[in-house]
Image 1 (tube, helix red, strand yellow):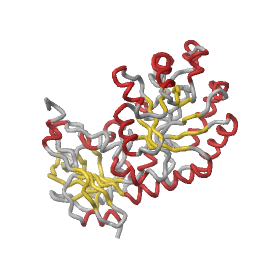
Image 2: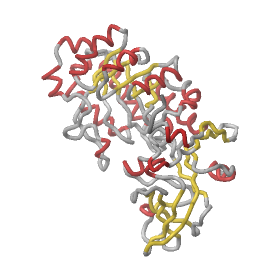
Image 3: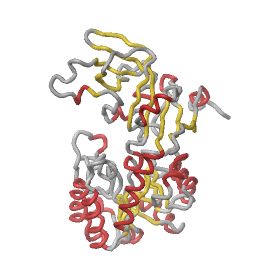
Length: 397
C-alpha cells in the first residue's frame, strides 16, 4: 500500500497539511552527502519551510538556518540553537536591528547604503558581515516574479553600484559575498551564474572568506545533476579559498508533504465540470496562483499534461476553493470516475511555501498540520480556529 493510500484510510478531518518525516530525512541525507563530499555548508531557507516542530528531524543533517528577517532569525536561533543562523533582508529596520544581533551569526546586506548604516554595528557585535550582489545573469524563463536578475531588480548590488558606492572602508567590513538568482533550477543554471559572478566580482572574491550561493537549487529532485553541483562548489572553494554556503528551502522539504481536502459540491457551467473543495488555492496554497502552477494530485492528472486524446475517456474537473475570489482555482484535472461531494483528494508536494504563506482571507479556517511519523502514525501538531483568524485583525491589549 502506498503512503497516499494509507493517508486516505486515516479518515482525517479536512483540510489538513501532512508533513512526511521519512521524506524529510531522505532529502536531508542527500544534502548531508553533498556537504560531506565538498566541504560546503547547507542551510534551511525558512521562507520555504518553517514548521519548527520538524527542526529536530532536520538539524542533524544541516549547518543551520537562513532567515529573511527578525522573526525567522529568532525562530531559527530558538529551534536550532546549536547551529548557524544567517539572515538577509532587502532593508533592515532600525527598531529591530539590535534584537536581530542577538540571534543572527551572519548578516547579509542588500545595498552599500545598508552596509554603511548597519555594518559597523554588526561587526562590533562579532557578526559575520556580507553583501548581496546581483550578477545580472538571468537563467530562468516564465517566472519573472522570482527573477532577482531582471532589469530594475531591487535585490542585490550590481557591479555598477559597487564601483560607484563601495569605498575601501565598506569593502573592509565584508567577510563574505552572497547571491541568490535561481528558482527551482538545476546545477547548469548555477554554473552559468558562477561564470557571471567571476567575470564581474572575481577580484572581490579573493578578498573575502565565504561565498553564499543562495537558494533555488533543486538538489533533491530525482533528475538534478549533483555531480555538476559538486564541481561548481569545489571550483569556487579551491580557486578563491572560500567557505561555500548554499541555502535551499525547497530541496529540504521537496515532495515531503500533502494537503488533504474534501469535495464539498460539484456543478457544471457549460462544458466545464467544476468541483468546489474545502481548501482554497488563495488561502492555503498561494503559490498555485502566484507562481502560477498546477500542483500534483494523487490519482489524477493535470489536463495540461495530457497528450493528444488521452483525456477523452476520463472525467475532467476544474477544482476550485470556496472563497469569493473568482480566480480561486487550483487547476483542471482528469479523473478515472466522476467526483461527488464527500470524495477526498490528496495534493502532493505541499510541504513547501504552504504553511508559511497561508492566510485567512474570507475568514477561511487554516488547515490542521499533522506529522506523518516514521512509524506510520499521523500525529496532530497544530489546530487552528476562529481565534487565530480574529487575533490577526484586532485588539489583543
